[in-house]
Image (tube, rainbow, N blue to C red; front, side, top):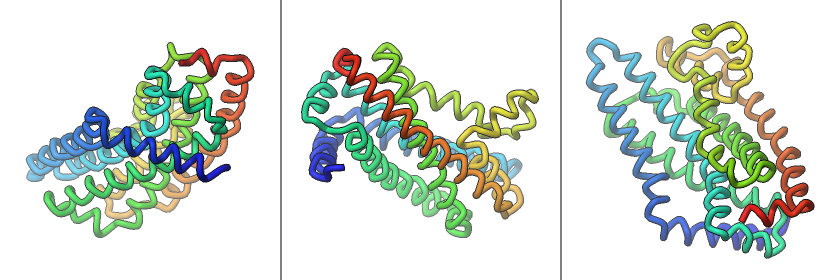
Length: 260
């Protein structure tokens, strides 16, 4: 990969991000205000449902983190397709993995900032001491969530390249279904048997189950951490050849140009 191509894309992304008010609202305002809403809810029910309130708060933080991680890859692609800038980027000769890696670096920068703000507000303004006491575990689950979200975003990008711009809605709708099947606020056992098998393969199931267990019991069995990383790594590794095939096929058939 050519680093100057990646640096050029990141420089362009920084300019666009800082000059697009709606992006700042999507990446900063919405997650922070949602956090405050659920933190206030958690504080209000502390007297009679403290664990439930904390579970809702922490799961929503991870949910927002997953959304932002994925959005910086697949939704940026979606925006570039509809604005016509994707054609200009491709015309520079950038390769599929240079483009993808630049998007991943952008995602890492944005999510690191947002995660720091969300956990900082939760710890210092709402006194959720769990964040400081179990910081290593939470960081481990955040890492698995980020890796899984990158894999998901790469798969969504491959689908958009294959199916066309009419399916750009996948950039924001796919995550919702994966979250639903990952059992965020409820145990996997609530699903019918066949759906439980699907849920076990979802990228966020072990993260959510691990966080709920941490809140209710104060500790987390190691298998939740290891499984979350193994499944996340599987999504990420499998997504790369699929994305590569979709990108090169779209370029060969002319579908890449017709996206714009």
